[in-house]
Image (cartoon, rainbow, N blue to C red; front, side, top):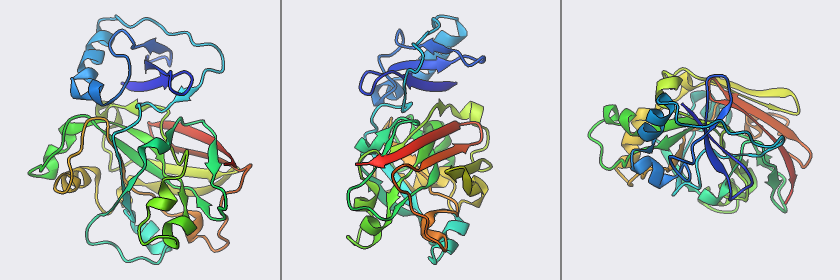
Length: 284
């Protein structure tokens, strides 16, 4: 299934996309796609309603906004330097264990919403990432093999970053990762049965029509299942949490001309089978 949310920010309506792309109203099954929905077996209830043809067609007005496919996560856990080519372009050693940091859940916005360039920023950067939404509680998993059953789905996640804030203003990365609007998500949450192998997905990103990132999840140092297992040894992952799994090479930080984003720039990004995002950057 492909889950989406349509409507103004804070008033999105949950929907499922039919095979022909029409949105089907899911509000009779759940008021929203959030932690409570995933924790209570909501995906299976929704699948049953879809199979039984109980979801009416939703006809939103032209120009209706697409929100993030999941309501505000309880937490966003991010993995840094998780692609071999990205580690190389930044001059970092390949990590022996995952590099973990947290991002403010309030950064999540829709896939086509404007993104704000922070005041005083000169080094706002892009990062296309495979986002993983947790469907069931993950705590002290015995092995990575257990992780697959706990994943609700996958989505395109844009881990926007301000490199000066991230690398020079604090010994931790959070300041450069948690600026307002810095995590567009969507347009869909795609359930694992439709994604196939998450270790072989192409990722790409363009800035003002110029391709900057073109990678594959096959280049990940630590794959999705390992990451969920690893994180569960240190924190409890709850239903509705988002895990950003890292970015391939091609970010402005690693390019010789350092072409950081400015107000007026447009970024388009996508992942195989998960849809495409497009954002225009504007002043905060």
